[in-house]
Image 1 (spheres, rainbow, N blue to C red):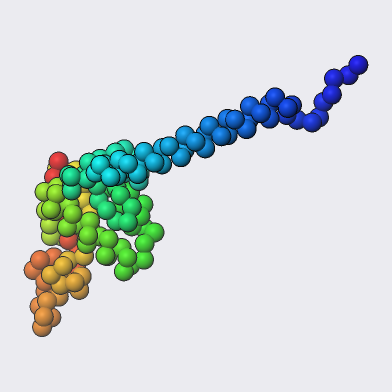
Image 2 (tube, helix red, strand yellow):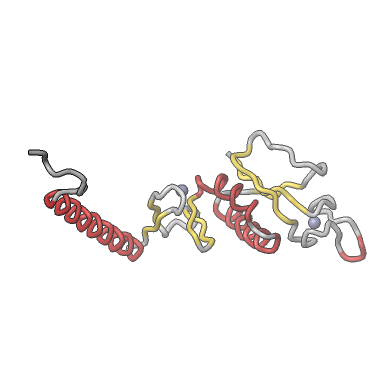
Length: 160
Ligand SMILES: [Zn+2]
Ligand SMILES: [Zn+2]
């Protein structure tokens, strides 16, 4: 006699698959509860590398709707900044620049030429709109902005 083929999973296989599915669902649920509990304790997770950080340290995670830890900032920002519209990018950029200055000793560096050159002793840098002239490169009465040398942008450099 030929054994029956073609029905795919046997009864036992189905039961195993079902209980496996239940277990995974339960674990997923527990994990969600646990992450919620950690947030109550002041521990939050980086949306990029999934590591946990203490919220008590304001320099650990940058909050932009999604949380990003300091070491994920360079990659996260370079991919995000190309996807944002001008207004959103400028807003996020300003927020990021002040966060970097406040918690990571970042300095505002004037552009010396039209193009961005890398600073060798910088760990990370972003180009941001000059706050003094709102990116126009000019101050009142058309005077060239001395904060950005008239380029309208400055570099926010985080030292190593
Ligand atoms: Zn991270
Ligand atoms: Zn300026």
